[in-house]
Amino acid sequence: QKEVEQNSGPLSVPEGAIASLNCTYSDRGSQSFFWYRQYSGKSPELIMFIYSNGDKEDGRFTAQLNKASQYVSLLIRDSQPSDSATYLCAVWAGRRALTFGSGTRLQVQP
Amino acid sequence: GAVVSQHPSRVICKSGTSVKIECRSLDFQATTMFWYRQFPKQSLMLMATSNEGSKATYEQGVEKDKFLINHASLTLSTLTVTSAHPEDSSFYICSARGKQGAAETQYFGPGTRLLVL
Image 1 (cartoon, each protein chain N blue to C red):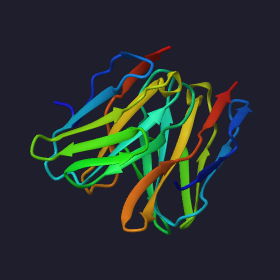
Image 2: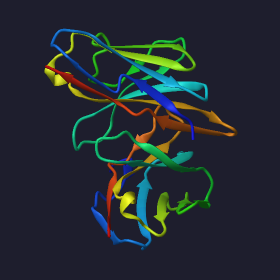
Image 3: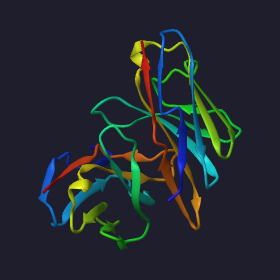
Image 4: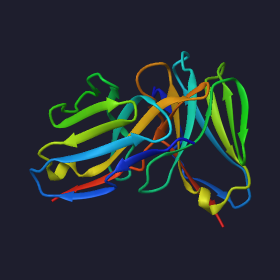
């Protein structure tokens, strides 16, 4: 079992819809959870981080964390074609480095 | 969000030469810096982790004598690819971790695209 799992996609949603990206992790000691967006040929860009159970909202983005289920998700409201990218879930369990999922490719159809 | 800069953004060099890449955290003190490499259509691969003033910790399979890392201050880390060969051509990305307010988070630099001829 991978430490951080994401569906590779592509996840295709129409413009204006809600995109839901999911991530599960195996280490119950994980403390911090991050979502990065990576456009093709570019480096990852931090979108959100979450530490506590529940929801955290920032603009069109909402991160949801459920530690009991070892599940973290990212919702993108009013999806735009410019949101088309690969979304990386990353987990920090207090060790040296973040553990990344393999990423979900999102395609927002105009 | 914090800014992490990287220089140069792109470099082309001849086989056998050495290339130095600089990574700076511009508005926060990075307790730890990380160096990643990414080949086309592949996942990020962590190469090494460095803390200011101490030796870098390299991931398995990464040659420490080939990829020299220096973390001179809380805002600067350098990666030197020594005697570069075509197989070293890749996208090198640094990342800095530090505290912003009460939260510890991690930001990536824009990356350096290396092409070795």
